[in-house]
Image 1 (cartoon, rainbow, N blue to C red):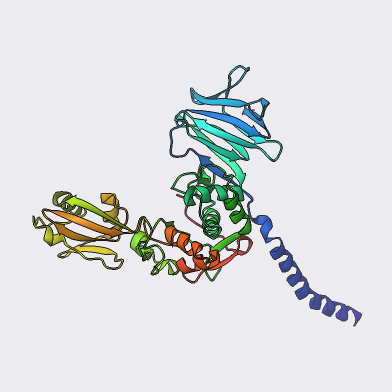
Image 2 (cartoon, rainbow, N blue to C red; image 1 turned 135 degrees about the vertical axis):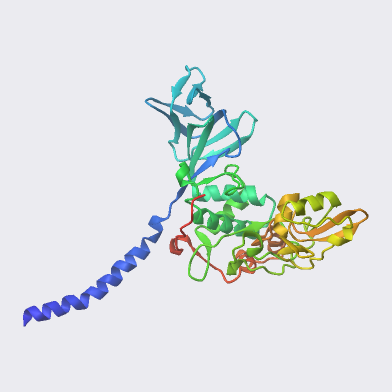
Length: 397
């Protein structure tokens, strides 16, 4: 009988233990969130020589195979490609050959600048690795994620804006960062520093941007079921954002398109471009158009609000294809006859999907908070800490 009572007590305790361990799992959820990120630097450039200069702290240069030495603030190392390897030269020392070089910060307050043969100079924090790679040098910065996000906000959002706008851009950048952390894992890093991922020109000393990142630390944008969204943005929507399917052929409920009264007075809200009839017809023909009319009026088309396709007779082509083919500022434009040519009158700048930066700047200037701005452009979303967001499995590109 005592044995039976003991068994019953154990079974009564088990559910409570399960709840307790689940609580501990949630309590430690943030432990699985990476605090650092690997960014490929100078990714859009062929780099055959790089100048590394320590500006604060101290670095240990680890040379593979074998060897290491210290680089103090004010010292510079030159790295160049040599017969499929790297040659490293510092002041007062002989040149060394290696398969890779890793510069590791020692003090925790380590900063360095990089410059290359086109004299581009940026400032970075954290560690820095160099590898020979198909005739160029692969440069990878391992840095704190929040410092990286502040740098992205500076590069993507500029400076001199209201802090609520910088908070908005910080949450967007953080959402993108965590959603696409695996984008370049097969290449040995997480993201690149170009528009293929997010533009990153090093860390920033702008106190307002750093405060905006700190005040939104960990915050990301998710769908109602806690999935990280595609946090798309563009310069100016012209008064109406585009549904995602008009650009990427995939309909997403939080990128359904909204009327935007805030950006219409901004500098990129409207544009015009005159184009010859031959160029227009050649562009259409390259995409399957069979007509051969010499009357510009044949191609007149009105797009009072955003539409997916331009049509001429029975021919149809996505406006986004025309935008890309002709190098236009946006896909929202109407076509007018102008003598023997055509006049394109358009609105907005960029793909038009997601947040409109110039509209968000106006909203922030009117005292609106970053949460309100984000929820205006991304329909039905929530803002939560990254520790409670679901991981999204993406195909690596």
